Amino acid sequence: MDEWEREGFRSANKELRYQIADIMDAYERQRVELAEVQQQMTAVRCTATSSDGLIAVTVDIVGVVTDVQLEPQALHTTSEKLGKSIAETAKQAARLAQQRAAEMATPVTDIVGAMPDLPDMLPGAPSLRESTTSIEEATASTPIAAADDDYYDDDDYDLDWRNPHNSSRFG
Image 1 (tube, one colour):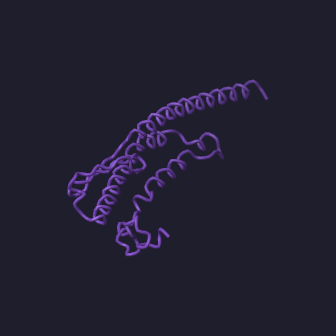
Image 2 (cartoon, helix red, strand yellow; image 1 turned 45 degrees about the vertical axis):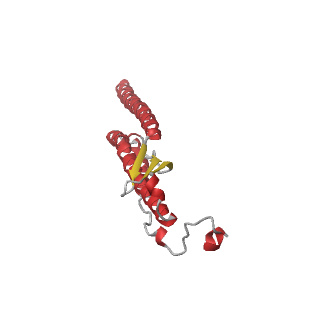
Image 3 (cartoon, rainbow, N blue to C red; image 1 turned 60 degrees about the horizontal axis):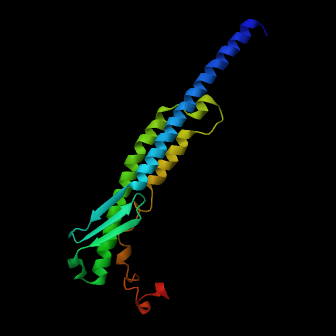
């Protein structure tokens, strides 16, 4: 190998090192931004109010109920109606949380989309883009989005959990 070829390899090696350093810098920025988004997501609360305004349900970013507020008038109904109203309001709050989570994830997926993908630099390496696509698909197909609104209308479903003789689910 002559000096000319060695110099060509050195130059190519140097350029590859710069590209890898750029990727690592971008990765570090993305990691920091992702940690910030995760921290922001843990603080998110979404509240929905029933159509009659008597019930308010608050959920966290994943749809877990964190608070239920009832106006005194809400208790002047049957337990079945109250249960259905609370459940429906909780589902509304969970849908709001799902939408908020998708909105908060958008900047992260935009960052990944702007970066060169790992296989572009290192043939055979795993794709970062495919990983983020999987995350987006999982977020869009959560059980909240696919919840069956008629579940509580099922004749086998008994809201009176205190009476085990009314339902086979508790015995």
